[in-house]
Length: 143
Image (cartoon, rainbow, N blue to C red; front, side, top):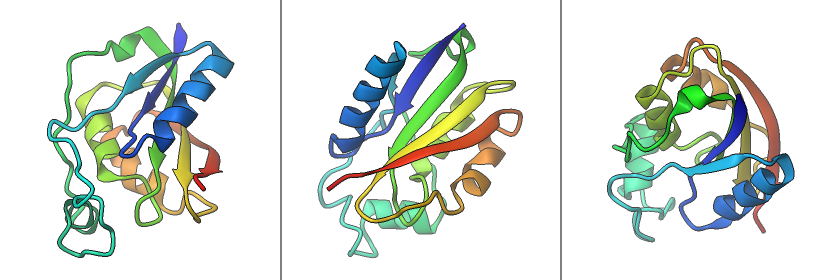
């Protein structure tokens, strides 16, 4: 079994961190992609009607591209994401709900412009992979 670095990156910051981590660990990478890409307007957290605001406030799981990764080939999966509203974006829930993570070790890492902890991330995402073992790793400053 091997290690996978799965990540969602809306602006490229998390992607850069994921690629560095993959190089350090000798791991494969996988980009978690929405079926509809986010625009800069979608990411405007100051606009309560932006796509990201609506998804986060309503715990709405966006559709993602699936079927292009074999999760069973990995025993440890690092999941990286930008912190949105003090937790993981709901696209991470979409990813977890789309594959079987039973018995997998999931290690979270994030990028953030100010948040220093994972907040309620595990509580919010664990229901979508209830048989996985979660742990927190690092939050990298994105500035």
